[in-house]
Length: 323
Ligand code: SF4
Image 1 (spheres, rainbow, N blue to C red):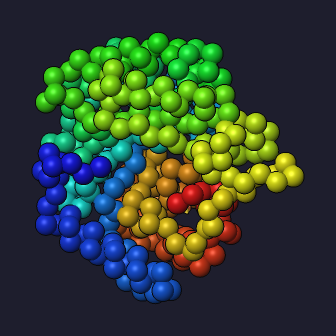
Image 2: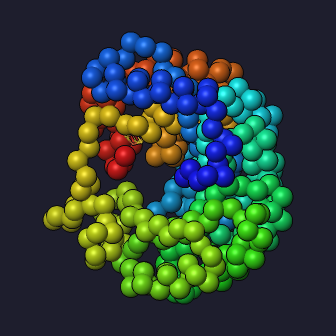
Protein backbone atom coordinates (compact mmCIF):
# COMPACT_ATOMS: atom_id res chain seq x y z
CA UNK A 1 0.00 0.00 0.00
CA UNK A 2 1.51 3.33 -1.05
CA UNK A 3 1.05 6.20 1.43
CA UNK A 4 2.67 9.61 1.24
CA UNK A 5 5.39 8.74 3.74
CA UNK A 6 6.32 5.79 1.53
CA UNK A 7 7.46 8.11 -1.24
CA UNK A 8 11.00 7.49 0.04
CA UNK A 9 10.84 4.02 -1.48
CA UNK A 10 10.28 5.31 -5.02
CA UNK A 11 13.17 5.96 -7.40
CA UNK A 12 13.56 6.50 -11.12
CA UNK A 13 15.06 3.03 -11.63
CA UNK A 14 12.10 1.42 -9.85
CA UNK A 15 9.56 3.37 -11.92
CA UNK A 16 11.38 2.46 -15.14
CA UNK A 17 11.42 -1.18 -14.09
CA UNK A 18 7.67 -1.15 -13.44
CA UNK A 19 7.18 0.25 -16.95
CA UNK A 20 9.32 -2.59 -18.34
CA UNK A 21 7.28 -5.12 -16.37
CA UNK A 22 4.05 -3.65 -17.73
CA UNK A 23 5.40 -3.85 -21.25
CA UNK A 24 6.48 -7.49 -20.81
CA UNK A 25 3.09 -8.35 -19.28
CA UNK A 26 1.14 -6.70 -22.13
CA UNK A 27 3.22 -8.47 -24.77
CA UNK A 28 2.92 -11.84 -22.99
CA UNK A 29 -0.87 -11.46 -22.98
CA UNK A 30 -0.62 -11.28 -26.77
CA UNK A 31 1.58 -14.37 -26.95
CA UNK A 32 4.90 -12.54 -27.36
CA UNK A 33 7.50 -13.85 -24.89
CA UNK A 34 10.58 -12.84 -26.87
CA UNK A 35 12.01 -10.14 -24.57
CA UNK A 36 14.01 -10.53 -21.38
CA UNK A 37 11.92 -10.94 -18.20
CA UNK A 38 12.58 -7.82 -16.05
CA UNK A 39 13.34 -8.09 -12.31
CA UNK A 40 10.28 -8.18 -10.00
CA UNK A 41 9.01 -5.08 -8.22
CA UNK A 42 7.89 -7.01 -5.14
CA UNK A 43 9.00 -10.18 -3.38
CA UNK A 44 7.82 -12.55 -0.69
CA UNK A 45 10.87 -13.73 1.28
CA UNK A 46 10.27 -16.47 3.85
CA UNK A 47 11.97 -15.86 7.24
CA UNK A 48 11.00 -19.39 8.35
CA UNK A 49 8.48 -22.07 7.50
CA UNK A 50 8.19 -23.06 11.16
CA UNK A 51 4.97 -22.09 12.91
CA UNK A 52 3.68 -21.96 16.48
CA UNK A 53 0.09 -22.87 15.53
CA UNK A 54 -1.56 -25.79 13.75
CA UNK A 55 -4.23 -24.00 11.73
CA UNK A 56 -6.73 -26.17 9.92
CA UNK A 57 -6.15 -26.05 6.15
CA UNK A 58 -2.59 -24.74 6.50
CA UNK A 59 -0.05 -27.26 5.18
CA UNK A 60 2.69 -25.78 7.35
CA UNK A 61 0.69 -25.74 10.59
CA UNK A 62 -0.71 -29.21 9.99
CA UNK A 63 2.78 -30.59 9.46
CA UNK A 64 2.06 -31.55 5.85
CA UNK A 65 4.82 -29.57 4.14
CA UNK A 66 7.14 -31.94 2.31
CA UNK A 67 10.05 -29.52 2.21
CA UNK A 68 12.43 -29.31 5.21
CA UNK A 69 11.86 -26.84 8.05
CA UNK A 70 14.33 -24.06 8.58
CA UNK A 71 15.13 -20.37 8.87
CA UNK A 72 16.57 -17.79 6.50
CA UNK A 73 20.29 -17.36 6.03
CA UNK A 74 20.95 -13.67 6.69
CA UNK A 75 23.96 -13.47 4.38
CA UNK A 76 21.90 -14.84 1.50
CA UNK A 77 19.04 -12.49 2.32
CA UNK A 78 21.36 -9.47 2.39
CA UNK A 79 22.91 -10.49 -0.92
CA UNK A 80 19.41 -10.69 -2.41
CA UNK A 81 18.52 -7.23 -1.10
CA UNK A 82 21.74 -5.65 -2.36
CA UNK A 83 21.36 -7.23 -5.81
CA UNK A 84 17.75 -6.11 -6.19
CA UNK A 85 17.55 -2.83 -4.29
CA UNK A 86 17.32 -0.68 -7.41
CA UNK A 87 14.22 -2.47 -8.70
CA UNK A 88 12.48 -3.87 -5.62
CA UNK A 89 9.85 -1.55 -4.12
CA UNK A 90 8.25 -3.87 -1.57
CA UNK A 91 9.36 -6.93 0.37
CA UNK A 92 6.83 -9.09 2.20
CA UNK A 93 8.55 -11.10 4.91
CA UNK A 94 6.14 -13.99 5.01
CA UNK A 95 5.31 -17.12 3.04
CA UNK A 96 4.76 -20.28 5.10
CA UNK A 97 5.38 -20.28 8.87
CA UNK A 98 5.19 -17.47 11.43
CA UNK A 99 7.70 -14.65 10.78
CA UNK A 100 8.00 -13.75 14.48
CA UNK A 101 9.38 -17.26 15.15
CA UNK A 102 12.57 -16.08 13.41
CA UNK A 103 14.78 -14.17 15.81
CA UNK A 104 16.43 -12.09 13.09
CA UNK A 105 13.18 -10.78 11.62
CA UNK A 106 14.03 -7.31 12.96
CA UNK A 107 17.37 -7.38 11.16
CA UNK A 108 15.65 -8.43 7.94
CA UNK A 109 13.26 -5.48 8.20
CA UNK A 110 15.96 -2.95 9.10
CA UNK A 111 18.25 -4.06 6.29
CA UNK A 112 15.52 -3.75 3.66
CA UNK A 113 14.51 -0.32 4.97
CA UNK A 114 18.11 0.89 4.94
CA UNK A 115 18.14 -0.07 1.29
CA UNK A 116 14.94 1.87 0.65
CA UNK A 117 12.58 -1.04 0.26
CA UNK A 118 9.09 -0.95 1.76
CA UNK A 119 8.66 -3.75 4.33
CA UNK A 120 5.69 -5.69 5.57
CA UNK A 121 4.92 -9.00 7.23
CA UNK A 122 1.87 -11.03 8.11
CA UNK A 123 1.55 -12.62 11.55
CA UNK A 124 -0.90 -14.77 13.48
CA UNK A 125 -0.39 -12.28 16.31
CA UNK A 126 0.43 -14.82 19.03
CA UNK A 127 3.93 -13.39 19.60
CA UNK A 128 3.22 -9.73 18.83
CA UNK A 129 3.08 -8.37 22.36
CA UNK A 130 6.38 -9.93 23.40
CA UNK A 131 8.04 -8.62 20.22
CA UNK A 132 6.90 -5.04 20.52
CA UNK A 133 10.50 -3.83 21.00
CA UNK A 134 11.55 -5.60 17.82
CA UNK A 135 8.79 -3.72 15.99
CA UNK A 136 9.64 -0.40 17.61
CA UNK A 137 13.31 -0.74 16.69
CA UNK A 138 13.03 -2.26 13.21
CA UNK A 139 10.05 -0.12 12.12
CA UNK A 140 8.26 -2.30 9.55
CA UNK A 141 5.99 -0.18 7.35
CA UNK A 142 2.98 -2.47 7.37
CA UNK A 143 1.87 -5.43 9.52
CA UNK A 144 -1.02 -7.75 8.68
CA UNK A 145 -2.45 -9.31 11.84
CA UNK A 146 -4.67 -12.35 11.35
CA UNK A 147 -7.63 -12.59 13.69
CA UNK A 148 -10.39 -14.96 12.64
CA UNK A 149 -12.52 -15.15 15.76
CA UNK A 150 -13.35 -12.85 18.65
CA UNK A 151 -13.68 -15.49 21.38
CA UNK A 152 -11.46 -18.48 22.13
CA UNK A 153 -14.30 -20.70 20.95
CA UNK A 154 -14.50 -19.25 17.44
CA UNK A 155 -10.80 -18.36 17.19
CA UNK A 156 -9.46 -21.84 17.95
CA UNK A 157 -11.80 -23.57 15.51
CA UNK A 158 -9.26 -22.58 12.85
CA UNK A 159 -6.21 -21.27 14.77
CA UNK A 160 -5.55 -24.50 16.63
CA UNK A 161 -3.21 -23.99 19.57
CA UNK A 162 -3.68 -20.21 19.73
CA UNK A 163 -5.25 -17.88 22.28
CA UNK A 164 -7.33 -14.96 21.11
CA UNK A 165 -6.20 -12.85 24.07
CA UNK A 166 -2.61 -13.00 22.81
CA UNK A 167 -3.72 -11.28 19.59
CA UNK A 168 -5.65 -8.63 21.52
CA UNK A 169 -2.60 -8.03 23.72
CA UNK A 170 -0.46 -7.55 20.62
CA UNK A 171 -2.94 -5.12 19.08
CA UNK A 172 -3.06 -3.20 22.35
CA UNK A 173 0.74 -2.83 22.42
CA UNK A 174 0.79 -1.71 18.79
CA UNK A 175 -1.90 0.87 19.46
CA UNK A 176 0.20 2.33 22.29
CA UNK A 177 3.19 3.05 20.05
CA UNK A 178 3.69 6.75 19.25
CA UNK A 179 2.25 7.67 15.84
CA UNK A 180 5.68 8.06 14.23
CA UNK A 181 6.70 4.54 15.34
CA UNK A 182 3.47 2.76 14.48
CA UNK A 183 3.36 0.65 11.34
CA UNK A 184 0.26 0.62 9.17
CA UNK A 185 -1.92 -2.02 10.86
CA UNK A 186 -4.16 -4.22 8.76
CA UNK A 187 -6.43 -6.69 10.53
CA UNK A 188 -7.19 -9.69 8.35
CA UNK A 189 -10.28 -11.74 9.16
CA UNK A 190 -10.66 -15.03 7.27
CA UNK A 191 -14.40 -15.54 6.99
CA UNK A 192 -15.69 -19.02 7.90
CA UNK A 193 -19.08 -20.50 8.77
CA UNK A 194 -18.16 -20.40 12.46
CA UNK A 195 -17.17 -16.70 12.62
CA UNK A 196 -19.23 -14.85 9.99
CA UNK A 197 -21.67 -13.65 12.71
CA UNK A 198 -18.79 -11.73 14.33
CA UNK A 199 -18.15 -9.43 11.35
CA UNK A 200 -20.35 -6.54 12.68
CA UNK A 201 -18.22 -6.39 15.86
CA UNK A 202 -14.95 -5.79 14.01
CA UNK A 203 -15.61 -2.05 13.77
CA UNK A 204 -15.35 -1.75 17.55
CA UNK A 205 -11.86 -3.25 17.38
CA UNK A 206 -10.90 -0.81 14.64
CA UNK A 207 -11.47 2.13 16.97
CA UNK A 208 -10.18 0.48 20.13
CA UNK A 209 -6.83 -0.58 18.63
CA UNK A 210 -6.40 2.22 16.07
CA UNK A 211 -6.42 -0.28 13.22
CA UNK A 212 -5.85 1.30 9.80
CA UNK A 213 -7.66 -1.26 7.71
CA UNK A 214 -9.84 -4.34 8.17
CA UNK A 215 -9.76 -6.93 5.40
CA UNK A 216 -12.38 -9.64 5.17
CA UNK A 217 -10.68 -12.45 3.32
CA UNK A 218 -12.24 -15.46 1.65
CA UNK A 219 -10.75 -18.81 2.66
CA UNK A 220 -8.93 -21.15 0.29
CA UNK A 221 -9.87 -24.81 0.67
CA UNK A 222 -8.05 -27.81 -0.74
CA UNK A 223 -10.56 -30.68 -0.63
CA UNK A 224 -14.25 -31.44 -0.20
CA UNK A 225 -13.91 -32.23 3.52
CA UNK A 226 -13.24 -28.51 4.10
CA UNK A 227 -16.47 -27.26 2.48
CA UNK A 228 -18.10 -27.13 5.93
CA UNK A 229 -15.75 -24.22 6.80
CA UNK A 230 -17.12 -22.00 4.03
CA UNK A 231 -19.47 -19.23 5.20
CA UNK A 232 -23.17 -19.21 4.38
CA UNK A 233 -23.00 -15.65 3.10
CA UNK A 234 -21.91 -16.19 -0.49
CA UNK A 235 -20.17 -12.84 -0.77
CA UNK A 236 -17.49 -14.14 1.60
CA UNK A 237 -16.77 -17.30 -0.37
CA UNK A 238 -14.62 -17.66 -3.47
CA UNK A 239 -16.32 -20.95 -4.44
CA UNK A 240 -19.61 -22.21 -5.85
CA UNK A 241 -20.69 -25.51 -4.32
CA UNK A 242 -22.63 -28.08 -6.30
CA UNK A 243 -23.22 -31.78 -5.54
CA UNK A 244 -20.62 -31.69 -2.78
CA UNK A 245 -17.93 -30.29 -5.11
CA UNK A 246 -16.35 -26.82 -5.03
CA UNK A 247 -15.36 -24.62 -7.96
CA UNK A 248 -13.88 -21.12 -8.06
CA UNK A 249 -16.50 -18.47 -8.87
CA UNK A 250 -14.03 -16.31 -10.73
CA UNK A 251 -13.20 -17.48 -14.23
CA UNK A 252 -9.48 -18.08 -14.69
CA UNK A 253 -7.92 -16.13 -17.50
CA UNK A 254 -4.63 -17.10 -19.10
CA UNK A 255 -2.43 -14.47 -17.51
CA UNK A 256 -0.99 -13.64 -14.09
CA UNK A 257 0.35 -10.29 -12.92
CA UNK A 258 1.72 -11.73 -9.71
CA UNK A 259 4.04 -14.10 -11.56
CA UNK A 260 5.54 -11.29 -13.66
CA UNK A 261 5.63 -8.41 -11.14
CA UNK A 262 6.57 -10.49 -8.10
CA UNK A 263 8.64 -13.41 -6.91
CA UNK A 264 8.66 -15.73 -3.91
CA UNK A 265 11.79 -16.95 -2.18
CA UNK A 266 11.80 -19.87 0.29
CA UNK A 267 13.94 -19.58 3.44
CA UNK A 268 16.67 -21.69 1.77
CA UNK A 269 16.88 -19.48 -1.32
CA UNK A 270 14.70 -21.50 -3.67
CA UNK A 271 12.66 -19.38 -6.07
CA UNK A 272 9.05 -20.42 -6.72
CA UNK A 273 6.27 -18.78 -8.79
CA UNK A 274 4.20 -17.38 -5.93
CA UNK A 275 2.99 -18.12 -2.41
CA UNK A 276 0.49 -20.71 -3.72
CA UNK A 277 3.44 -23.06 -4.31
CA UNK A 278 3.74 -23.95 -0.63
CA UNK A 279 5.91 -27.03 -1.17
CA UNK A 280 8.21 -25.54 -3.84
CA UNK A 281 6.99 -28.07 -6.42
CA UNK A 282 7.72 -25.56 -9.21
CA UNK A 283 11.17 -24.44 -8.09
CA UNK A 284 13.00 -22.42 -10.80
CA UNK A 285 16.44 -22.15 -9.16
CA UNK A 286 18.20 -20.95 -6.04
CA UNK A 287 19.52 -17.46 -5.33
CA UNK A 288 22.47 -18.99 -3.47
CA UNK A 289 24.01 -20.07 -6.78
CA UNK A 290 22.30 -17.88 -9.41
CA UNK A 291 21.16 -14.29 -9.70
CA UNK A 292 17.44 -13.64 -9.78
CA UNK A 293 17.86 -12.29 -13.33
CA UNK A 294 19.36 -15.63 -14.43
CA UNK A 295 16.57 -17.57 -12.75
CA UNK A 296 13.79 -15.43 -14.27
CA UNK A 297 15.29 -15.86 -17.71
CA UNK A 298 15.95 -19.59 -17.40
CA UNK A 299 14.16 -21.98 -19.73
CA UNK A 300 12.21 -23.38 -16.79
CA UNK A 301 10.83 -19.99 -15.73
CA UNK A 302 10.08 -18.86 -19.29
CA UNK A 303 8.26 -22.12 -20.04
CA UNK A 304 6.19 -21.71 -16.88
CA UNK A 305 5.26 -18.16 -17.90
CA UNK A 306 4.27 -19.39 -21.36
CA UNK A 307 2.06 -22.07 -19.89
CA UNK A 308 0.32 -19.66 -17.48
CA UNK A 309 -0.33 -17.26 -20.38
CA UNK A 310 -1.60 -19.95 -22.75
CA UNK A 311 -3.05 -22.83 -20.72
CA UNK A 312 -3.11 -21.92 -17.08
CA UNK A 313 -5.55 -24.65 -16.04
CA UNK A 314 -2.85 -27.23 -16.83
CA UNK A 315 -0.89 -26.14 -13.74
CA UNK A 316 -2.02 -27.59 -10.41
CA UNK A 317 -1.45 -24.51 -8.19
CA UNK A 318 -3.01 -22.12 -10.74
CA UNK A 319 -6.25 -24.10 -10.75
CA UNK A 320 -7.22 -23.07 -7.21
CA UNK A 321 -5.96 -19.49 -7.40
CA UNK A 322 -8.02 -16.31 -7.60
CA UNK A 323 -5.25 -14.16 -9.11
S1 SF4 B 1 -0.95 -19.92 -8.68
FE1 SF4 B 1 -0.49 -19.51 -10.85
S2 SF4 B 1 -1.99 -17.99 -11.49
FE2 SF4 B 1 -1.96 -18.01 -9.22
S3 SF4 B 1 -0.51 -16.41 -8.64
FE3 SF4 B 1 0.63 -18.33 -8.74
S4 SF4 B 1 1.44 -18.41 -10.84
FE4 SF4 B 1 -0.18 -16.88 -10.82
